[in-house]
Length: 300
Ligand code: CP
Ligand code: NVA
Image 1: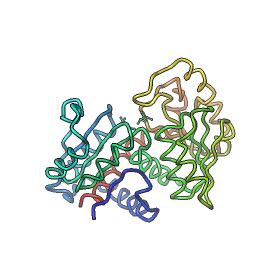
Image 2: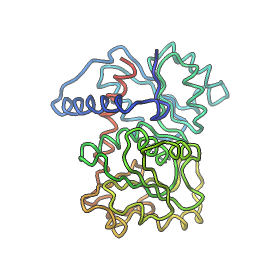
Image 3: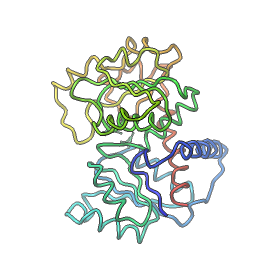
Image 4: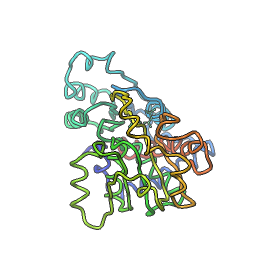
């Protein structure tokens, strides 16, 4: 049976643990210059309907370093862009490639692709979720020994916020999300969180309450891909900017995460991004190691 990663809820806590053990090993091996050929002869088809730096490059290099290959497809230059269905595309790509990565808009597209595909489908970001990113974020939290401590997410209730909530439900760490009214995370995901016992996911409009005592402070752009940049929204989000003053409310040993790309001076200041508490570059690097482990798990 093939396994997909449409969202984090496709994984169990145990599987995440074993992914991270593998990622740790792969990271060490890479530093020593050791090459693995575990995915020799395997190809990942990567269909992008939105722009990307990290996801594209880290997946492409991950495949190469594991002895496999990757094919980059942009919807605008493929027949999907002219209306060929995602299901038909999936059936065809399944006969060429051993896995399909998609970055797209609606989560329904990821679901349609996964349903029709005979090979594993990986969500490389949709409007609703960004599971590969949050896996790397969680791995970074573990490397910094901040597991099970309070995580704060401040800003827009977007794909990153939704995936953090799924992560908190799976791994049972306390999470507080602060967004302005009207920009809360996805309703259905919040409903699931409300109905699950023994988890602490709090949604507030108070950024100070969210950050207070947190060991991990996390933010993301106020304008996700596909959203219009509006002055009114920028103004409403101003109190949610991750700056030094807000960061002072966190635990003294708190670390700062941002999935990138950042709008410096908007959701995060230069001072925080480049400061001593930032683990943002380590987080970006970890995309490579964690995705290698994921590719081995799904494609081998
Ligand atoms: N964080 C992330 O997914 O970055 P890209 O949009 O550059 O892929
Ligand atoms: N929320 C952002 C994440 C980018 C990696 C977006 O969807 O554009």
